[in-house]
Amino acid sequence: MLGTLRSTISPDIGLDLGTANTVVYERGAGVIVSEPSVVAYDTRTDEIVAIGHAAKEMEGRAPAYFSVVRPLRRGTISDFRAAQTLVARLVDRALATRPRLAPRLVASIPGCATDIECKAVEQAVRAAGARYTTYVPQAVAAAVGAGLDVTKLRAQMVVDIGGGTTEIAILGTAGVIRLASIQIGGDFFDAAIVRELRARRFAIGHLTAERLKIELGYAGGRPGNDAAFVNGVDLDAAAPRAREVSQAVVGEAMHDGIERILRGVRSVLETVPPDVAADLIESGITLTGGGALISGLASEIGGRTNVPTMIAPDPLTCVARGAGEILGSPTLLERLRPEADRFTRWYQSLRIGMRESYSP
Image 1 (cartoon, rainbow, N blue to C red):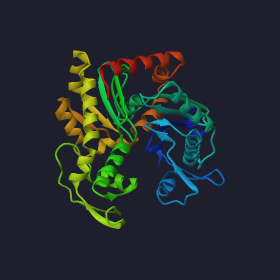
Image 2: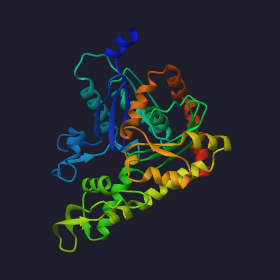
Image 3: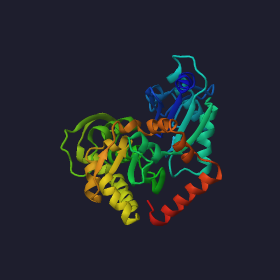
Image 4: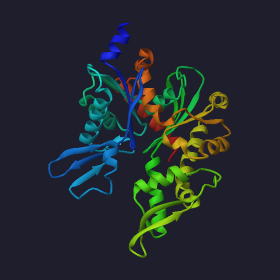
């Protein structure tokens, strides 16, 4: 009863502070906020005028005195003040309907983050008003949010494809057996679509590219969806035009990124001991993150690796959900908690080991 009372007035919050989206999850209540990780400044007053969806809609449309920024790049903080404001406002918005004490909050950290970047996330979250804050490996949070029991001895594999990075991890007994973090994600695909169409003398914005990725993006065999009409600039005519974009063009733009993810998955699998490989044949690969929804990607990974591959339920929120649920398991939280040098040495040794065996 005391635990229920405490969680009512001081909730447990899981935070996925992602390159593309920030998701706030409250243990016992579910996902309560999901907004784009975008912040808009008024450069004349240095005030933040919009965050989330409202700020994202201003991209490419705002007057010159507005600066629209993404406070995270490739999963780590590039603008500390904007990141702090984003976290504080989203947590306040999520919990504004009831009186409360400061929440306990767990954030996720990608495997490619340096020690300084890890501390920057922790400080931004703490500055946003959390009573207790720590961070956990993003891959572990994704696995917990996908419903995997990471405390089991049997090895399990998760591939989390976010906006800025793809985390490829094999987990067992609440630890990371193998890890690779590559800087390929949704933003990479959006930029590739913009470049492909520009090479075809048609300029579009990143919001339009994101729409094409969602509607027409695929891996493996082409599904055969209808082409999409989009608005942009005909570079030869130097004038606004509407143009039909085929699925083949989008697939060609995304091909390199898809191949790099597939190579990353195979490279991690090639390093595992035979007993771990035997476990994975039974437990399979679980895809999380927005990239898990790319048409045909799960079957392509399964076919290339000979390991059953499935998409997690609600893959977009797995990391935040897992981070929040870890707070409900004191034993698991203690094992994952970054206790100064112990965590740093452990994470650095993993990254060094994977650097030797895999270079993205």
